[in-house]
Length: 357
Figure 1 (cartoon, rainbow, N blue to C red):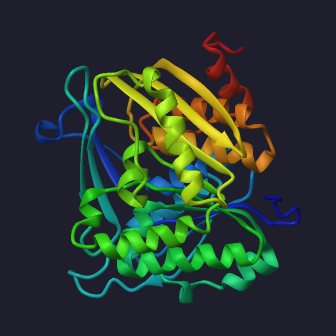
Figure 2 (cartoon, one colour):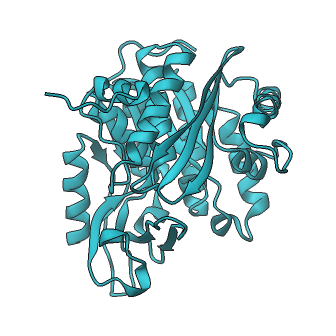
Figure 3 (tube, rainbow, N blue to C red):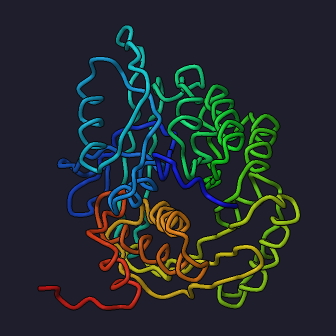
């Protein structure tokens, strides 16, 4: 699909922003007494790769009016060169709205990472299309890619409708639509039929679909590779077959990708990407990467792939860049990859860790 050449925004991403706290020095949460705090969301992790490499990027979200946490989040988005818009919603009483908290143990060695989400009263659950001027956004200003996440699509009935309507409005104005499926069992519990229908409608409007084999199976009912003892490298053809089934189910998709990961320890992963574009596959084979913190690695990869699509790159170049931005995210305690420039990303892909002077 041809991208809109006069678009003001390279990427627009709806999200619900929150706060993540992580124990210092990779300590377990239940014994830690010092924490590193950051503003976070999976979707802003994706957007940060694109914004910090100089492409105009906007976040659609909601904030708690007058909240110091809201002020912290807005300052963080500005730091990442992310424009934002959305309503400031009154907190109400002490039991009213707030930004969600994510509490994460990064793990170490054989101790696996653990993540606890505390999303009660989350202000982002109230996102709806009547809070935004979609004609201005997609029509007057123009957007190259709208990127949606299954986390936002499944957050609440309101956000499910929000994502469906965003996808339809984007398509009506010639904007490419992307979705990272991001299945979460806790979000889907008791809402399986409702969310299956919403995800199918969103995916039917997508030019770009991304997820792992579990995401495609549980969100869209696409059969994945057989479970068994074979390594991921030995199942690459099975992953290609899965992508073929996705293309049959969603023939309008021009890009379909999946991350490939084998966990050696909390600090070492084998990392790869399989990406398809209009009949052409490219495999970025699994290679060992060092992991400081794994959270956001998949988001970083999606951001790198979308950056490549925005730039008009080949499927090979998009996959290589996405591999490297995912690996870059794993080198930081922040949830997102923060590339200094394209060269830093390509050096990581090439294995060039020599000092730059």
